[in-house]
Image 1 (cartoon, helix red, strand yellow):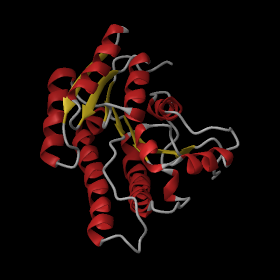
Image 2 (cartoon, helix red, strand yellow; image 1 turned 120 degrees about the horizontal axis):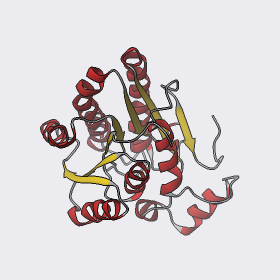
Image 3 (cartoon, rainbow, N blue to C red; image 1 turned 90 degrees about the vertical axis):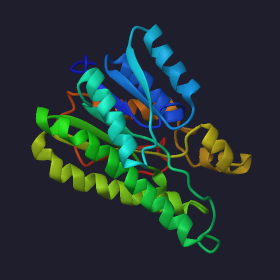
Length: 251
């Protein structure tokens, strides 16, 4: 893909799953990739090693994206090494309760909403000065199909991601004149360790049966949609949502 060489991409929550797949794919497309992680240093360093072995450039940086100070320190490390962040992929998954509204406390619902938005606010604020100064940038937020297609027990995640997606659209409107696009990639169920803790076999089979393409998404499917929005040639799409769900829901 053209127009990507040398740009710096920060992928939050990149030590596994969608984030790891995205980091690898963006590196394949000649971006220098920052592999952000919370606690799994070994996994993050393995991804960096894989990218480096394949001829790419990557660095692992630990930071809890819910902490503004930690995010600022991370972005300063990137600035010192590579000059700033050109592409932000905010993928980090903030923990959440899986239970009904009837059984949920406000701390569980409100806490998830607060942490989700605080993280998105902090990482976007931190990368914005560099993008504004150069007159271009790409921001991609990871949403979820659950923000539009409710499923039992997923009210905390669905509500928080719905707020995130509306936040992204407001940013798209405000930042467009600065040459910065903001888009959302909204996966349906994804094959992952997280999915294994949420789906039993019967639920998984129902999800597959409801999907016209006949399977759940894989992390690489989602990464390709992210890479599309991250590409420098993709200059005239902003405030949009890409549904990566195999046709399970169409909007």
